[in-house]
Length: 194
Image (tube, rainbow, N blue to C red; front, top):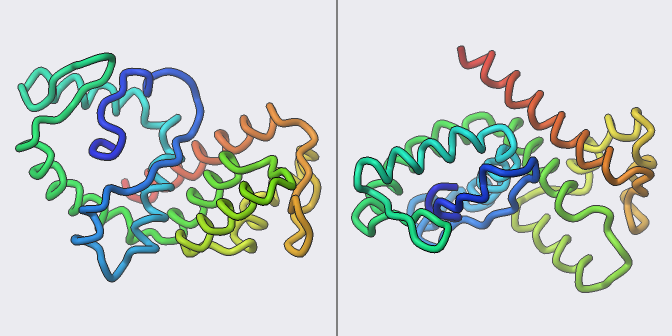
């Protein structure tokens, strides 16, 4: 997230997830694991509501150390710091991607959050299916991620063979429930790592 979205100060506001793409130079580091890397980046974007305060402090510390500067409401890394950061992040990503189940779940939740409700608009459906494929996700992953929403009565059952796949009865509760699930997954993964 640090390199991709730079230090946008607005990242500290709100509880929305981010749907971010990895920078092109990352493919040099992870060429053989491109789908997994793409899923990991989307999973990190899903964690934005959980990590936003730490993220903002991180950028302020980089600025204090002289590794970043503020311009037009965003922090920017110095070019030298960008390459150092990429090397550091490579190790952190390699550690994070070991938990592929967590990454798949977070990426699936982020897809639900950012693409649904899915309208009958063919362009949006095409982008959705293309993104799903690029991430190496299947409709079954989204079905699994949406099951709790169905049980809570927020959505219809996920149906893989008919658009729009699910019907959302309450969009506000839908978004809030996804954020709650992301927070739960993150706290459970931190407990396992401690």
